[in-house]
Image (cartoon, rainbow, N blue to C red):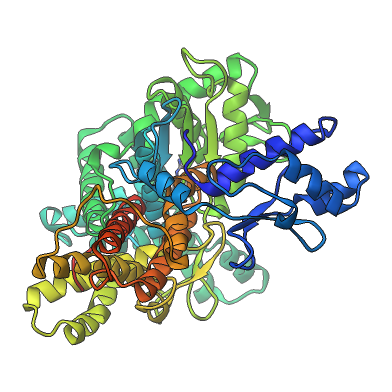
Length: 615
Ligand code: ARG
């Protein structure tokens, strides 16, 4: 990748100088390049002399002198001299204004300086992972929003991305609700044609309750002699629950055999759930569609084969009647078949890895799933590797499996985010509320826009706020859901970034009104410190995407965009654009505005955040 970022260029040059000056040092040395502490001294500084001093047995100043004598910074910075060294051995670097303009020319293209990758990879992103018959709630937000941002990011960098929605659509719990639904439809209690996800959610909970035998209660009633009435009630409950569970097991068997009635009921549940799921995520602007669904059911026919394969090659072994894959470094083995012959969550994930690597051609599989499943993925990844399912056909080595784990969304009380009554908060209700809260702000700001337009803008701001709040923190950490914080127009928020972009766009509207034409080929003049800071921020865009992809951390893009918006605000305050004293400066600044607008829009698009022309 061609480097346009001065920080990266300087790192390279100083590293080379240090290697030339001290050829006997072992391993690469970090030249510790940082933005200059004092603008009057320089734009960047190299802080390596202090840490190198001990290793090379010289005093830091001597080390700095040695580096200065070797470092070639042309053409991007002024040559270094004795006067570049400050204090104990800081080396100050001043960039040449012309150099910044030249570097910017390389970024001012449709790709915004992001080069095609050296080699294109196939990246599978496992995202969303909703479960059938369960209402979409805030917990599903992260698995979709973060996964979507990573998918977009890898696409933006030129890779081939395959989204996979590993829907929880198989197994005993699903059979329970299928059984219950069949009963409800048969008795006419629900209308199969008008089923909603809320109905399913209720049926799911009822089915679960119905199958939950209060064995402990019965045991206690017997032990403490709670009386014949209590005992009889408990006996009845337990017998009923066992019966319900047996019926659900029967249903599961029928489902596995493709019994037409059971299969039709199951399919109905799947269709209703997925239709609402896709609608919710479309509303959120997530790129996830029906054909990305590859639920657990899609692996059901492969599970017996997987287990046979693992056993026949000695990868899996018996343990207490069950089958497990023991993996190095993890005490608990990966369970692939229960004693009763049933397969598990891990078994379908192993089938998933095999298909993704062998059929879909994955070089990399990224799972955006709750951090509470870390042990599961560690086991499954190691087991898949042991089984050879990660070996890429037609390419050397293993596909990389990565768990992009995320933390929990907390309520203001510090506990997992729930409604006042302790229920999970429905995702659609959450978006409604965000949009509703934005509406009054929009009405205030733009009273003369027609109502539907105000609503459209409010919805976009609300969605930007929710998604940005989810993406802007280190994903592994828990975060507190707060409408007040995320909807603020100032600070590290979605609305602030949307507003920054709107501001840029309005400059061009004003320019048009005043008959100012902007020349995309006008020479860039980077003289004012605020222009310099903005230019440096713009140049960092490609590296910020690369680092987010490297660490699977979209928050790095959020942080970058926030800094860019800040640099732009300072620039806009300090440097008149349309009112510039001469046309050369006016045209150069218009170009800076235009480039800023394009980088902001592109970055928000990578994050999956909708943008606006006015708000
Ligand atoms: N359905 C699962 C759950 O709700 C998430 C699926 C994640 N993806 C996977 N390949 N296991 O916990």
